[in-house]
Length: 264
Length: 222
Image (cartoon, rainbow over all chains, first blue to last red; front, side, top):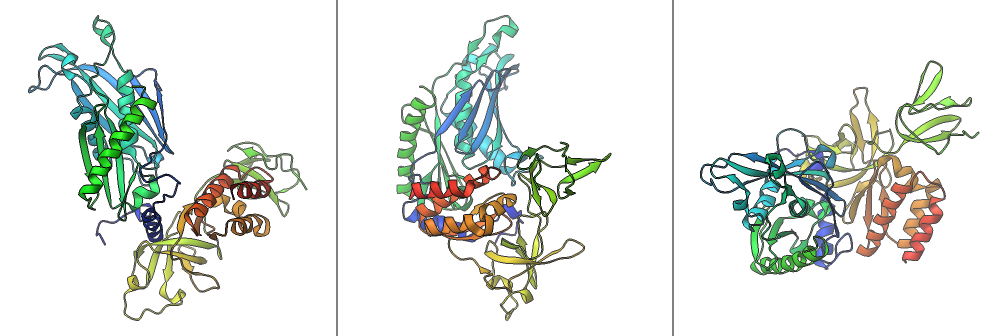
């Protein structure tokens, strides 16, 4: 038993864990999906008209809102000829009883970093084309993610929302006398997350499954079927076979989401 | 007696014409008039008009049978999450077990789920629970589903009609806690079906003829 005190909502009903482990070992899931089946994602772009880009994503009962703001700023001294990408996630207390207001929690920081990594490491945005004046002025792209309702798998919902919003985003160059242009996009990454329940990996875990999971794995792939980023979470372990199976599923689901949801 | 406004959804501050009925829960009066102080449905019981809130925390009442989980262990009692505004306490003397080796975690550990009753609520709002009554026990196996505590009476139905229909048609073992925690045990697809039905009842609780519709849904899905 860990010494860190948990709130009542964070303590899992022991019999819920036993039940989910039992049924997943038999190949079943509590919402009737197959083990490698993801929930249907609904993406609603241009949700916030005043932002440079935005998307509302529903993944089952999980609901997130992603906004893109693009402003001018100074480049970092070590990268004078490239734009800046910053990602931030906010776990709003209204989304779940376990979310508290105040400074970002560990989970919020991890979420923002995993989404950021998927976009940055896939080279989705060509940051070199976002320079206004070398070494002095570049475009800064802010990705702000708000969790409105939490029913598991925020990583996939936020990644999908961020990618959908970036695809629609316009750089407001008319503010400095130019012409607005869409963000220079090279690749379209899609992240798929798995949870290990007992000895079984399930794709796109819902809240019940996430609560009882012993390990978590997120795999981001690009349209060529290459793995661009990964994140392993929680304390449990994952075997080599499970890892390869997860990568395969993630490539397959990524293709499907790119075609069906993002229209790419 | 029947109120014009009965079974309608009222908003906080909405005026309610009591038509000679007595003022019940969720209603306040000001300047000789009566108003709702929470969002809910007006219902009349024993000549009292009450507002049944659409959602809210569980407020424990003596002798309620609830499902609680252990969140902490003290030297002679367990601290239980009852989904209420305060935690509940279960003293070893109010259980059928005896504290032989001074370690309560050997009897009930953190995360264990128990079906018990509210024994006493003290003046300082301490909630004491008890396992000493027929049918009360530690729950083993099965799955947990949460519903709004305010909708539990609707899931039970008149004289238990709704919950009995569900049990009969699906064959799933159901244990309802007044605090909105529901324990289900049976084959996965049946448990899934019952979970869906519970969510449906929760959503449609304020409408009438629900038991018949649920019966139809269950029989179609069989």
